[in-house]
Image (cartoon, rainbow, N blue to C red; front, side, top):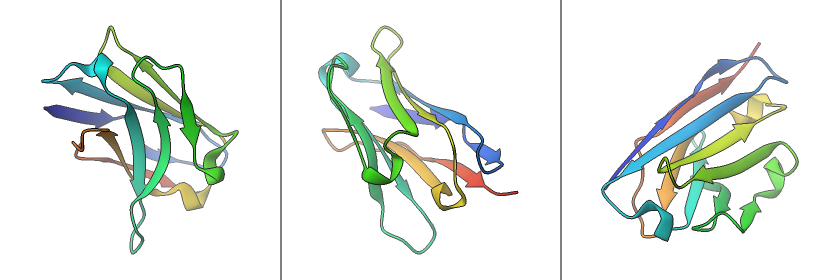
Length: 112
């Protein structure tokens, strides 16, 4: 199983980023997927999740209306579109399967 996140970087407050998580080594379309994040000195927290075929999504309150999770099962990839970014969104973002596998993370820094 391999999960590789990409798309992180430095962005100004109010800006946007799109994270990607490319999956391999398992039947991607059979698994729910999630994005988590961990800021320095804080616990890792759930950001958003999506069902195996994309019909159901869930979001943490602190990203509702700003972030959108989606997936492309033909490309074995899950995405996180992040808009209206705030400094408090600064964290390492991880994707995770509902079977417990994690990616290595991608850093998102929101700063002017």
